[in-house]
Length: 159
Image (tube, rainbow, N blue to C red; front, side, top):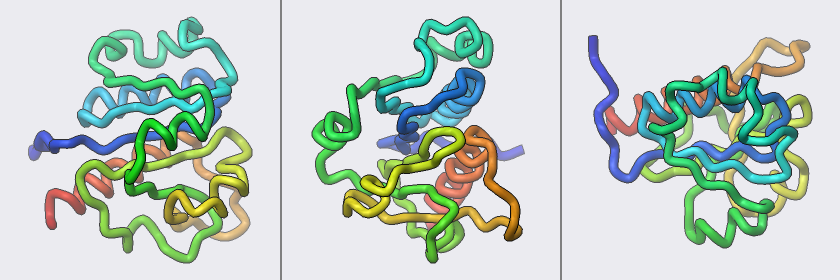
C-alpha cells in the first residue's frame, strides 16, 4: 500500500464559517493524516472546544497544524500570494482539471450554504467544482474536503 509522501509545504485546507462540529472534526483528522494545515475562518458555528468536535478528531488534535482567523479578510492578510481553489457546486473548472501544486489553499464553505458570493466573486481564488449528478444538493463538507485533498495530493505526486 502506498502512503502519502510528505509534501513541503503542505496543502492548506480552509474552512470558512463551518457550522457542524463533527464535519470540522473529520476534516481535522483528514489534515492530521495527510500533513495538511487546517485553517478555520470565523465565525464558527461552535466552539473549537465543543465536545462533538473533539470527539470527531479526539486523538488527532495534537497532530493538526491549526490556524484560526477572525474573518475572511484576516485569513487573506495572513496568506498573501497564496494560490486558492474555491470549492463550489457551480464552477466550470473541475478538481480533475486543476493544476494543483504544493502549498495550495483548498477553500470550502459552510454547511449548507457553501462559499458566499463575495468570496467566489472576489478574485482571491479560482472556483472549482467536484462533479456530481444534477439534481442532488451537495456533498457533505468532510467528504468534499477528502475528495479535494486526495486529488490534490495525487496530482502533486504525479507532477
